[in-house]
Structure formats: structure tokens, C-alpha cells
Length: 304
Image (tube, rainbow, N blue to C red; front, side, top):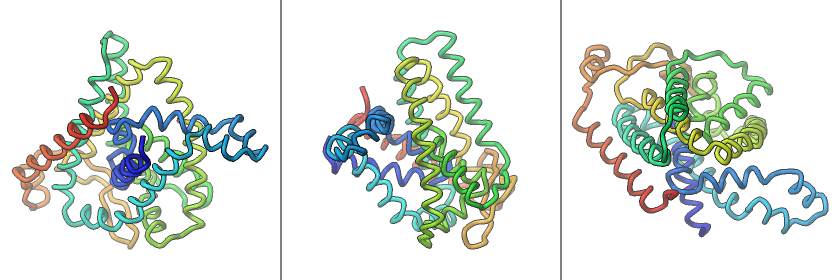
């Protein structure tokens, strides 16, 4: 796989991970790099450390597929640092059309994953139901208060990265539930390197631990795990439904209030509650655009 293609996939993952409710893991799957990504992360093991200790840099680099990881991480970082302000602005000023677009993306992604479950049985159907229920529970959970200390920052990174590599569960949405989303976004904008270093350490620890479990599940119970991941995506549709009623708020990076806990409502009820035009035709059109975009990406890059 060419570095430019991996870099572009990384940019798509980074853009997705900025938005609460959209998972970079979903993008990794529909662009055909999910298994490669998990395998590369899993390769950071004792053999890798042994090669580093012996100063076999080339061997260590090849062991973890370093070229792939470097291009992907550069793409993710480029996207996050270049698009954080833009996506924050769109979320603040035009949230309903943006959510409509992402609803189409997630719905199509769920159907893409659903095709990966070849043979259905009661166990796989149960896995689908469990995944959907768990994602719905997370989506509708109230915000908790996370202390902004070194331990809190580390734990936030740990939990967010675990969610980030799961299709359907957004790392940034986990940060919202922890009450850390605005704080993290502010740290990215202001380049608070101390904060970001602790967050990255937590993310690194979570990535190494959770990727091994997920890799093992996908290779030992592939069909059941795919059904579970598909359920995560279907359940996460509640997060990206365009019309919502806000139940709780969280303070953003500049002291402004942002929606934290929300429940889906109809366009008519949305209009009654907010007085804002639901823009149904525009939203349906953007849903279709997002849906078609995923099917095009899957037809071009998706795993077969």
C-alpha cells in the first residue's frame, strides 16, 4: 500500500475522530486498513523491544510495519491540527446539516460491516443486539465529571483511544461523556504540550492493551466480533441523528456551553423545542451524500 494512500486514510480518520459520535475505526474499516492497523499495533511487543535494545532499528521498524504506521499517524495528526477549528466552527454554527451528513456515513458503514457477517446464527444475532444496546447505552448516558489532573488526563486518553479504534464508538464522544472534550480541544488549539503528552501516554497504553484483545477476538471469533461491531455502528446512529433534544450541557474550550447528553426527536418536535428550521430536505440530501460516499470508498478501498 502506497504511503500517500495511507496518509489520506489517516486524514479521513483524523477528521472523523474530531467529531463526537463519529469513529476513526469505522473509517479504517471501510477504507480497508483495519486489520493491518491492528496487526501493526499488536506488533509492538517484546520482540520489538528486543530489537530496539539491540539497536536493530531497521528490524524493529519492519517488525511493526513502521512505514504504514508513520504515514497513518502523520495523516491523523495533520487532519486533527488543521481541521479542529473548522469542524468546531461547523458544529457550532451548522450542527444539524453536519449531523445529517454523518448519519448517512454511519448508516452506510453499518451496512458495509453487516455484509461481513456471512452466516447468521443465534449467537451472532445476540452479538449484534448486545453491540447495539451497548452503543445506545453509551450514547444516551449522562456526562460524568472527570478531574483535570495528570491521572484524569491519562485515563481520558486511555478510554478514548479504546473507543476510537472500535467502529461505531467515537473517542471524542467518550471525552464528551467524561467532561473532557472542551479541555482536550482547547489543549490542541493552544498546543499545550504537557497536557497532550500525558493524554498521548494514556492513549498509547490503551492502544497497546485493547488492540491485542480486539485482534484476538477478530481472529478467534471473527463472525461474532463483526456482528458485535456492526451493532456498535447501528447503536451509534442515535448519536448522529440530526434532530436532538438537549438534556445536559458541557462547558467548551472558551467557556461556552455545548450539548453533552441528547436524545433523538422528530424534525417537527425539534422545531417546537428549538424554534429552528429542521431543514429536512437539505438533511436528507446530505444523508444521501454521506451514504454514497461510504459506498464509493468501500467499493474502491474496502476489505473483501
